[in-house]
Length: 416
Image 1 (cartoon, one colour):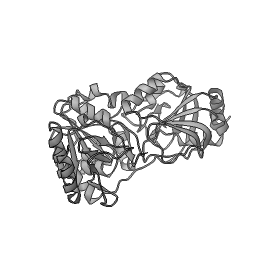
Image 2 (tube, helix red, strand yellow; image 1 turned 30 degrees about the vertical axis):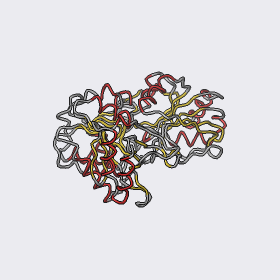
Image 3 (cartoon, helix red, strand yellow; image 1 turned 180 degrees about the vertical axis):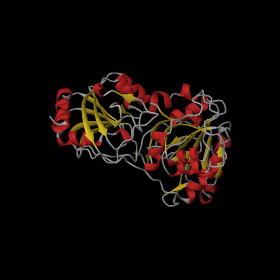
Image 4 (spheres, rainbow, N blue to C red; image 1 turned 120 degrees about the vertical axis):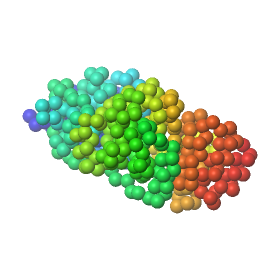
């Protein structure tokens, strides 16, 4: 019997109407398994598929017209009534997803692994959520990708833990972010908030990458982040990131997953200083609070003059999800010397729309409350708002908006 036939047999044994299935995302997304399931979509009729798929990391095309997809980020490639039966969006931050996964009864878990020479399986470059299900004993079907590296800093799993294994040979997804003058200017502003010895968290995209490039003259930085990109590897190789001053995990780069170039994957899988941990550790505010001088740097769609942060919605439409930013902001608040920073361009729509706004438009949601924010950075400067009154923070935010919008925002601030 082929591995594909064995997997189909395992799917038939576990799937039934009302069943709940977990599927990993990022580099742990099992594209081959999803494609196989889509080709036999009748097996997933009236099944709930809990899908972890961060924005920008969509791999397999899914065709499950009778399946409900439960997601925590708005899936750009899925549409209810077309390629899936229904979509349920759950507005949860990463630590809450962790709790949801621990409290939900799952009939099956699907994930991708890299092969080790000793015949065990490696979580490879993505250990954020899947270990939480595996450690609970949820039945597991694994896709073992021969091209996914077996990382030194990731845990292993015995093959007999799986009820089915699909062998594959697929190039891991890669992500490149384009540098822009605006992003570089924002990165330079954020760098003024980071001191030698600080521990930094960043996300995915051109602004986080620009922030990392702007830190090249710093010394002995640490990294504790939900994800790492090429910029982290470059800082380690330059000797900027050493982790020497970290109050926990000293000397280690702690992350949930890596996403970037082939060079990043080669480095992250082979450097013993890189530790891949699940979300119950990377996003736990009690853990983050033990890290002195923790600087959480995250992006947003807009910030209002009260200091509320919208990182999810545009014109009332859900574009993303809460993600891990709120966990890191709250972790920074518990850290001695910690700072939560939101970095964003001053404008959108080719300069026609200000991202610093008097109030959010109807339908736009606050991802983070005004009390969560310490500083906001645009290409025009930094507003340190943590200890400012309502009136003073509104004035400070107006001053880092694009010049053509400042008078309007100053007037709005005067009315608060």
